[in-house]
Structures are given as structure tokens and as C-alpha cells.
Length: 357
View 1 (cartoon, rainbow, N blue to C red):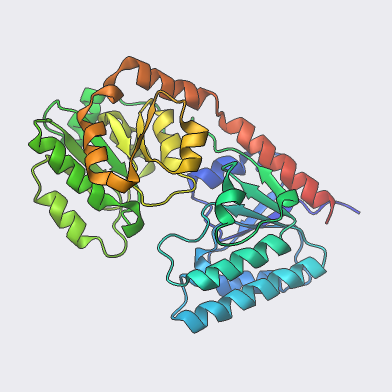
View 2 (cartoon, rainbow, N blue to C red; view 1 turned 120 degrees about the horizontal axis):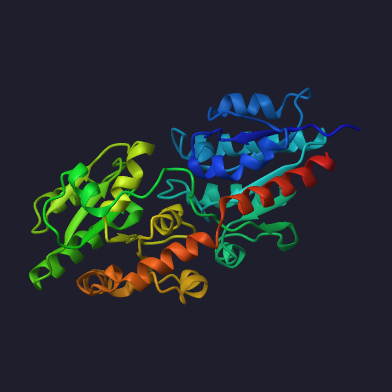
């Protein structure tokens, strides 16, 4: 029987740079990439017997978080699981990527636990990025260990363009002064702990640091109070509170001296791999799995989540991140994670699943 060289992605976020890297090799091998973000259309695809090919479930947030209430979230979850079951009855294979233990800032944690637990049972392969995913998820649901396939996150080499020299980058963004600049990049959401960064920069400034803050990303959720505190704080602030276009990403990372991820909880973060691509050191929360995986890296420091404000302030006041050693270590880490390797591992996984369909 010929292999169905098609992958249906849900949600079909084809403009996501990580997805583009991940699926570049499987496309080169002749596979068609299908997929749509619309939930109802996805259910039609999954319940249509004439549809073929591997199903790749990426983020589950459109299933639950786009519901109108808790009852609707459970209805959509059951509908989605039933649709996947139907597709499997017709011989289709399912791979599920676990980006997060549960969707960030979820409104329906119990329903999401149920959804992820059932997905683990339905999936033919469970793609994890962190080697500690099963252990961390076990606090909420169990994953069948025999289904897990680890494909580590790659750098973003070749995605956003060449590095931009620091002085030129700052001039382009209108950053004034020559003091160290901490960058917060990406969606501005409650779980990302921006209030800790606001407090930390204030503490560092009051202690004599010439720190400044770069804030680039679209706000989402209840973050107005935090943004007001930053705007009216003592630290010079350069903001871009909307989508950052791909051609501007290298400029923001070029203007910064350190990327700060003050998150309350984190499983994987593409931003740290983006920082490494541009030789930028990173401050991460002291999540045990992050310390275990990256604790030996000279370009990474960890803040104490039990005393986040003061710990972040101390790490920002120290100029460790401006050293050549730290920046070189970041770039060396990026070199060790080539996009081609991640893409090839994913393509091999899809081909194994397609051959079993």
C-alpha cells in the first residue's frame, strides 16, 4: 500500500517559526502540510473517512481556551477526542507535541488534564522537547513512556536574519544611553511574571544600576497594571507593545545585553533558543528541570522563584551577562542545536508513522 504523504496539523499555525523549522525536512521529502486553526473545520477533517495521512496535534489551547464557558470546553474536548478516535479507526496515526503541561493561564484546568490524559492514550507517538516532560506532567496526568520521542529544540539559525550590531540596533529602536539593557520578548501574559521584572528593575535602579528595559510583544490578558508600573517606574523603558515583525527580531536581540524570562512556570521556551542564536545570555526561573538540563551553561543564570524580585535584581545588577565568555557560550550552544537535525528527526518520525498507516 502506498504511503499517504500528508500531515494534518492542528492547529494549523503554519507561520510559527518553530513549526516551520520542525517541518522543513518532511516537506523536502515530499509531504503535503495541511492544517487549519478553526476547530469546527478540524473536526470535519478528522471525521471524514476519505481524508488520509498523519495527524499532528500541536497546541491544545484552541480546543478548550476558545470555548465560551466550562460546559462548552468539555463539549469541545469530547468532540475533539471522538474525532481523533474516528480518524484512528480509519487507520490514521497521531503524533502529539507537548509544548506545555497545560495551556498557559488556562481557564479550565480539570478539562485540560482530562484532554491531555486521553491524548496520551490516543496518540501513537508523543513528541517531547524537554527530557523531563513525563516527570513534570505526572503531577497532573500520566504519559505512556513507551510512546515518547524526544526531539530537542533547535536554534533559530537562518530564520530571522543576521545579528545586528549593538549600537546600530539601539539607534534603530531609539534606545537612549549605553547602560545594560534587559529584554523581555514575546506575548505579555499574566503567567510570564512581568511584575517580578518590574520590581527587580526598580530594586536594581535604587541600588545604583544604570539598567534599562526593552519590552517587545503584544499584551494579552490582565496585564495593564503591570505595564503601568513599568511605564511609571525609575528604569528607562523602550517598548513595542504589538507584534514584532520577523525582520525586526534580530534588532531587538542585538540591542539587548540579557534576555529575562521571569516566568512563574515553564516547561519549554523557544525564546531562550532564540537568544542563544544571537549570542544573548538568559535569566531563567530555577525550575528543577531547567537547572538539571542547563545548569552547566555559562550563558544561563537562574533566579530564585521563592524570592523572585530580589533574586532577579541581583542577577541584573551583576554584569556577568556582558562578558565575552557568556556571549560566546550562548553562540556555542546554538551551534550545538542545528535546525537541520531537529527537522530530520521529525521527518524520520513522520515517515515511521506514515508507513504504519
